[in-house]
Length: 119
Image (cartoon, rainbow, N blue to C red):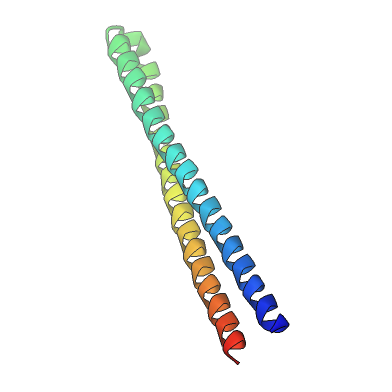
């Protein structure tokens, strides 16, 4: 009976730890999604400012080279932002897989504990 109690306590600890990991993963997912949104907003703001600069520069023929340089900067910035968003989405997928794995492990842990208690 002492073994059964110990196994029961161990399964509770196992499940508690699993829940803690899942909560941490969910929090990390929320943070990563906020990062992705912030990057997307930054892209919109940056592109808006750049368009305004290009429109202002178009008035002066001498500054057309500046407009081209700014346009190139926009392309680079957007490419980097897209890469960040893709990386964030990939990280979210990995974290969700971790949460599922932990959930499965806690089920296995409990099943093992129940088997020991039954035996």
